[in-house]
Image 1 (cartoon, rainbow, N blue to C red):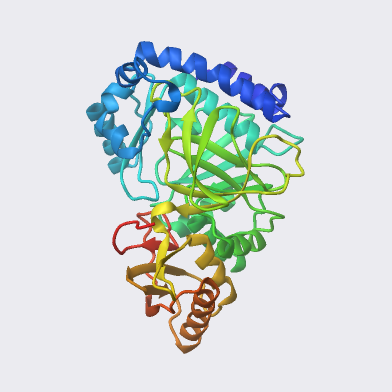
Image 2: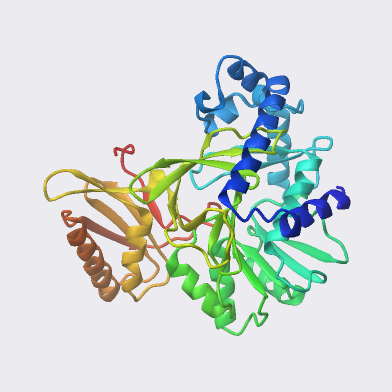
Length: 430
């Protein structure tokens, strides 16, 4: 770990790389891409073979299966998949995450798709990541003395490598007893709290019950889709003006919220192509322009993003995102009145449930053609009626047949990322 590298990246992102126009961003992207492709031709067997006969625009799309199947040919630092996977699994089972492969950090990612992924980052990439994250998360003004609490499913030296008297990190294991975690969190007194929405909900409940009285300067939701339903509760209970987000996954640090709470793509380091799903939603195809140990090039994420149409008041030229809506594969399919298949994005149906009440936790799973399973933490006549009314009203607005509903009790699963909407029936068909 090099504090000099961290400070250099922090200063570049925070002060020295304003990139106030789209033209400036695109110039930087072109320069970084040219250098990156030169490197890949020399150092990656997978990309070297492809780039011998193809341009960047003609490269095939990557996904998690390609990455895992061709891991040894894609990576450039001599870390084999089997060795990295064995260490990452051993770390997970022991819940100890301080072992690396030489100077390289490795880890697992389940992702919202549920399929295991593997990442490897070099020491230089780790330092750059830490510097960029700190530059984009620390509040304006005082930079020293912050206490950052991280609730994560897997710790990694990636997350705590910068701990010092200036900024201290503390990792909280989401698999540990949550009452003990919250008590320890209260003693730690974080100025910045970073956690998945499902964990933030539990902390919010503790705050409502008088068991957690710390008001962090900033709260960040990570790792799971942040639903409006959850954001409102967390913001209110934790005394925040707004809830922030970090869009971070195995494929890189993709986006952050500005001081106005608007999500912006980190286009100074990544290139995002768009595969449009409708007039306003797209799934991103990501190229990380600086990640070399494990190159991410034209990687199709499968997430659903909705681009913001109005300018952000912060003034940055980085693309603004209205919402990160979830997984493309979790789009529900209802039958239209004319017999056609109508895609219903996760965000659309979760917003409909904002108007229902009588429950706190829910999950919607499609289990058949025009059949939805609704899991609620409070299943009674009132909650059934309210949910049925809102789903029926949504179906009417969309010109769909009213789906059959099956109500069950909500059972939390702390071993997996929270998904409010799940497509559990058939293949994606639209």
